Length: 266
Image (tube, rainbow, N blue to C red; front, side, top):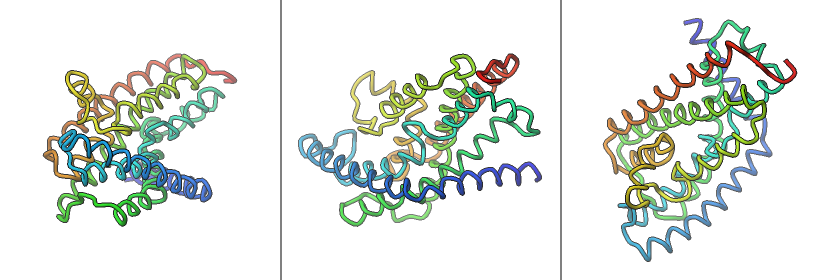
């Protein structure tokens, strides 16, 4: 119980920290709404030419756009979550303080990132999504059970997102600088998560491959759960499998890194 309260406090701290950036949050809401409008009209034109692309009708395509804008910052699709701070602490040597804490390093950063994700969804993601709902036809469910399944899918998506970025951050133990790996996180996040185009729309072998990569668990899977395009338990199993695998790999890499810690300034 004590450990649970500790990690809950860390999550609350992550939420409160990002809640203090009011101007940045307002700017993010505006940016996501504008990009949502650009993507919506692009999608509408594309689906006008290719009806049923990816198995979606136009209302589903519109829903996918606004969900993506809601989850863009929530899941740190282009980075900028816990991994940014962790890379900085590794570079400066402050990670030594974290290693001395009587807590689990991975769970500490996961809790903080989940708090950040919750604030980004409520503070930055909900408004663009509601804007889309008010002004465009969207394929949203009326069943409470579907929204409940979607909530579970979002939580698992957040864990998968963290696990990917945590692995990237740990590379700083060897690279000493996180700039390059941050660029990799940004490119892979946008390209493989379905942020630009639903992964269902990619054809052939390439489409088959991207739909089984962990990035698919971030936007594509929650979107399909929300719109009833996939069976929830199968979606949960896919997300949970990647979450467990990536977190376990993160622990192995963390163990290797902390046995021989070499940091700039430390």
